[in-house]
Image (cartoon, rainbow, N blue to C red; front, top):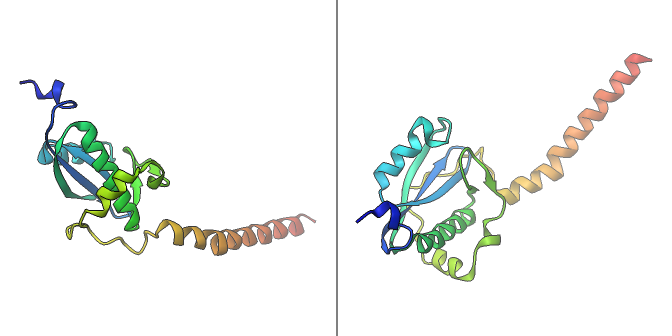
Length: 160
């Protein structure tokens, strides 16, 4: 049987996995062969441009590719709840809010998942999106604006 052609439509064992990066981002994918898929991601043509990541198996299921995609979205949602920012495709396109495309069914799947122990802890340099948003708008941007105004005033005064 030619699995390449039929893999989308035939129920078969599929594995969900995550690539967890040091910058607080992760990518969730699915495959029928975990070892081969990890090698593909780590190769020069894997799309991650040499960035280091931890490859973590998340769960396994039997179903079609469409069934596995529902589980993929559920794991994205679960990772987002745990504070990870989500990549959609290499080389790092971020999904701002994975919950927007998450259905009730996907949320119920995510509720049943146990977060794997093998997932690395998020580093201190990887803020959660809500906390980072508050920090940026309340402190960082006003500070940078103030510095820019002072530099501009100094340039204008020096020109006079």
